[in-house]
Figure 1 (cartoon, one colour):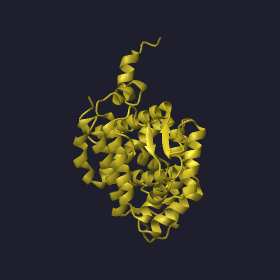
Figure 2 (tube, rainbow, N blue to C red):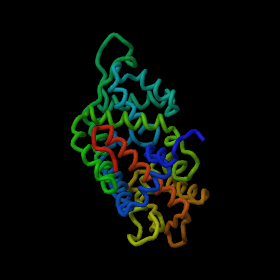
Figure 3 (cartoon, helix red, strand yellow):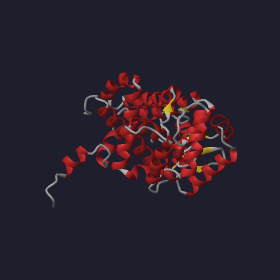
Figure 4 (spheres, rainbow, N blue to C red):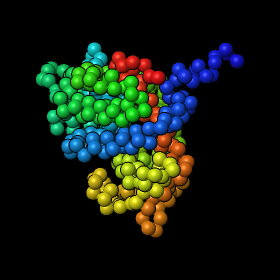
Length: 295
């Protein structure tokens, strides 16, 4: 034994199994999880075509956040710096970073000043619309988290500042650096299938909100309309079918003859743990931004 009290160590780690389990036991946990899903879907509906492209999958969403983080650094944001950060962290290849940067510049999300240096080395500027997307999503996430952690509300007024929004993104990055397993799709179908694939989480969140309010588990049974999912989220029905087939093969769900999705108890547990972990991440962010410590 090294003299460490396992209970005290658990209390000090907001993402420990014990801390996550306590959040799952909160009487308003399911309400908060559904609010979190509803906010994410509402944010998606508000996005224009350019923003949807820049956030289309996990890799692009990570680059989006990295732009805000690098903008805070003394050297600022450049394509060269974004490439180095993405490649070193395994988030994206250089080719994908260049495609991201070109699209962001072409759609006015980033601006490039004139100068003698190669364009990839010049300091980029984030457009107001770029930051507004991050602010809206951060606000929605904090408001949902407040249902199980009211203390995070103190951080909400601070999001008016672009610098604070970037600071919040940096707090997430530091947390992911300290806990790399949070970003590695460690094996469960939630991360391997729904988080990793285009539109997967939106499909899952949609189905979460189509369930019986009196159900026993967070993820139990939902009516399925492939046409509605395809139309709402801009992906093909073939893509939806592949998501569902992969989920069935992984034992996460079953699609019945009556077009209902029945989720396994183990998958529901995985989704609950993920949601509780997200709430704990938002508590860490709120504390970083100067809110009072969590209870």
